View 1 (cartoon, rainbow, N blue to C red):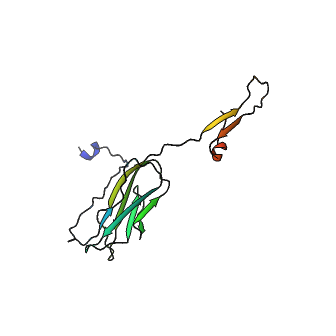
View 2: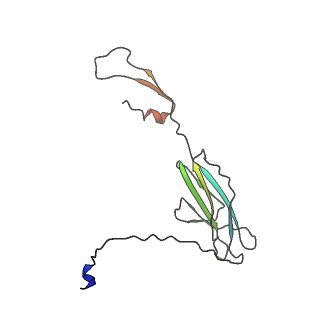
View 3: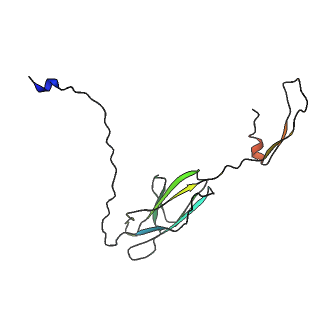
Length: 159
């Protein structure tokens, strides 16, 4: 009896998950170091955030070239020592930055700071100031109202 006849075959897709594991190489102090100097205490109660950082090369000299990213996005190169994020959304965020020395060596382990933004939504003060006081027999009603911001008066709807 042929043993191959007893084996059933089927095709099915399969997936392999591969993670990159950072390898730390002893460079003898050749690579730059990066430090985040801003203090971010979560939750942050403003949507506009400035994060400051600095870097030094292997001789202790200041560095003015960096790469940064927010929430695992693309790396962005800058010659500044701070990044401003206007109007960040509520929630958890992760900022990473790494220094680049004049020889093009990048910090092997980016400096990072996790933080959370939490802004309570501020709704305008809205009040109805005049309305029909008696029973009316018309499909049209008139209401007058006050809104604390001009923009909010355009957003009010009757339900």
